[in-house]
Length: 180
Image 1 (cartoon, rainbow, N blue to C red):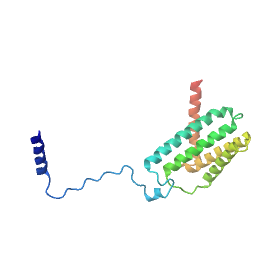
Image 2 (cartoon, helix red, strand yellow):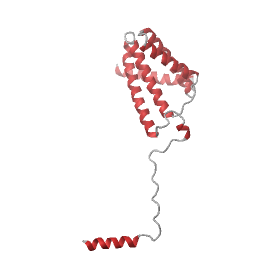
Image 3 (cartoon, rainbow, N blue to C red):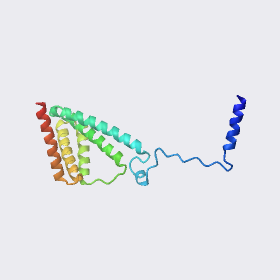
Image 4 (cartoon, rainbow, N blue to C red):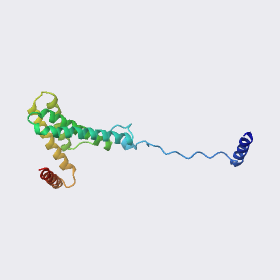
């Protein structure tokens, strides 16, 4: 056995090159540093995967809140505050997901400022004075502001929003006809 170890040692010493050892190949960085534009934006210490995971969690929370809000919509006269609160929290989570994915902060336009103001007013009405009427009015203004923001954001503006609404209405009618 000792002879085998000695032979292996001799073989390895003969196969080594005479010069200095070459440097090891560079290892790829699993999460590269963000570029300067990303570093100056929202959450500069988060890498790409942390942003994606955070956005996915925010989207899941947003979907949960919006589904719960939709389930409480038929009881709107009785549960207006709950609807407004769930709708607003779902909207906030969706905005958080978009901010994490975008990475940089841009100044909001007039429609975005109207939407953010309506969102804040709805949350204040749902959490503050405990008025179902104020909460329902805030949710209505928030939905109208979201439609205006969507109209301004979509290519084609009003025509694209009208077409999207028509497609959604047709899908809902087909679903309702199939259920009956």
